[in-house]
Length: 576
Image (cartoon, rainbow, N blue to C red):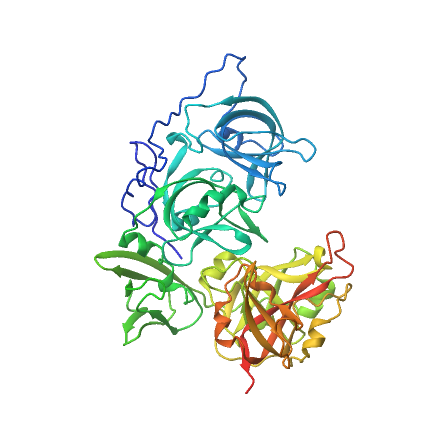
């Protein structure tokens, strides 16, 4: 969603990051908690040793990859390996941030609150700017800085979760320090999350040793707090990056006002609509929030000759002729607080003339990285692992007359378009051969260049497998069938496990669900599958998609292993 965001720089102390113009200056943290303003000095310690020539961290991050650099910075956070004693890497800051990544055979030592002078090779790995192969030239104690607190001049400002998520994930921003106002949660694998006060936006804390570095957050589970955090190692999925954070300390509890609560649901008015349009039509907009009790929405169009919004008893209806782009403004109201959110709607009307590729031909002749085009019918969507894009699907199974395949939309496309079963789409994307999974194949970076709505018949018949056939489906190394789909009868169950909520399918005649043979739905790991809850404990006919082939272990990508499966949305039919 497009946000009208501004960054407000206050010269009296630290910067304040203001997202969408919605935030008042936050109150001070509660008494008794450490504060950036309490006897914190940004004055660097004086050393009698020989002065070492250094450059600023900001200048180091401008260097070409592979350049040798020497920097001096404060140790703000240390992440350990699974043994909880060996350092995985260290975050340094001098106002800008960078991580120090030691060689496996050359460990380093560091202490939070000390200044390190480090020489090494600057590089960026998966969005993470770092000093590799480091040598510690100097380690200075900074006794004037209270434990776990950094100089106020090093802090970029105060932010809500939505503000952080709106920041570009670039090497320049990685390592920056913010005071983040959020609610603490502990989730899958005992990981800690910083959640928005309302809505589903969240920041995952990153650690190399089972999140033990953040055990101080355990005292604040479910509480609204201000957390001093480094913008840390970005999470990567394919070519996509998203923020993770490395908390340093809790500065105190935070009292949230109505306007800040509304900021947590800015995505909700438009999260179930497509903003990329191909023909005249209508869509439903919500009247009240399902996330924040008491919040209501109203809407206005910037051009009523193109688009109108009308209200009935339960919803608003957006009607448009798709002759040209338009903008809708949603006004979010809670008590006396109001917040406006604008959404641009784009229109495409030209049908592509390029000759489409055939899915089955691509399986045998498609080159990794090549641009391909498909004309196909949508079978249904799945959440990509760990990415929900505001509860939208971003992966879909599509079919042409030759076969089926999985496509993964670009993040921008996933946020602007919702595909439905039976729609006919023209796809442009990249043919991806993932050799680590016995040459699994799919389309990534996919964009929809045109769409015909309605229920189009499937261009070929889909077969059916029994649960046992699915469970024991043979991995074909030379012709990996990732992307194929088939119908199957099963029973859907839901379990709370040590890894969080998991959804499983059992054979349709299963009676013992504790010890019976089951298969978990792959994309349920880290993704929101709550839309399946109404089908839990029921006997169903479902459409299964073959996600990929899972190797037995590292180094065995082309031998052994088993297939992982997706449960494709819009294709769940209860068996009476």
